[in-house]
Image (cartoon, rainbow, N blue to C red):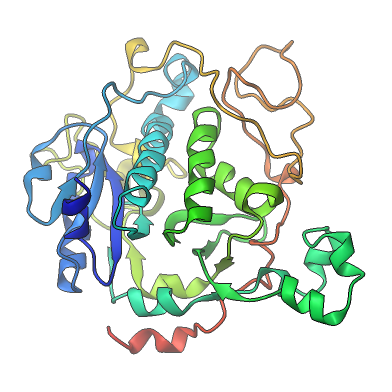
Length: 362
């Protein structure tokens, strides 16, 4: 499998995504756009088996031995049915990250939701992106993301602590309200540090939102991942464009009956506003389509986190549940408990990357 993954690489970068049968049409559109720009194929982690996976522009990773299913509340509460597919896709996304980054060829990964299309060759820009996370004004010093002994040391030592490096994690910022890197389109450089971080994120996603877990680890787990070079840039929007954001019906044939969209035949433009694209076309779940066992393997937040987990954080859990991170339930945080970190600080923009360069290679 590792040798076949390498055939999808363009300058050692591969494009990876996740899709169910409901999203076969946009998956094929993504693959077509990638092939036009020099990628032989797109690597996909399927959530189920479907005919489109036989397309030569796709390379499908093996399905897990058993379906990866959401927690019981996604079947129990009708108002959660529309996000059932969204939650389920998170398990397959982190699995895709792990399978690609652990392959022997050391492939770098541009991971994206399947409702994106590549519009220019992203490799040159991704390769030259420079991260200087500690250079975000006095932010790193104020929040002790540089250790106190360094802050009191000589300017030379401080310069060493702030040393710029090739960016290992590059994403767009999700805005000042969310304070997160958006993982719907993210570049992960294949390094030992990134693989270690993704392994922990994969573990924690069993009990929380994948995007929240990655942001907490890369921002605040200074002991394990504090050296990971990270930055954000809105220039990513120039190398790819999103076609089906939050149910907006720009592609009206996406889930039309008679396509490969699956049994529901629901069009994305008919989905209630705010629902997730990954859940919008997914059939409504039944009790057997949610995981009934308790996940007890997930590790909790890093000790150095600035996220506020102290109050009750479990989702649709009993009122008498213990406050804080839950080891047997889905954990969530409202926006008010999120905090900026070294990677999401607004000043932590990728260096050596100008949006004016987008015309090159396009």
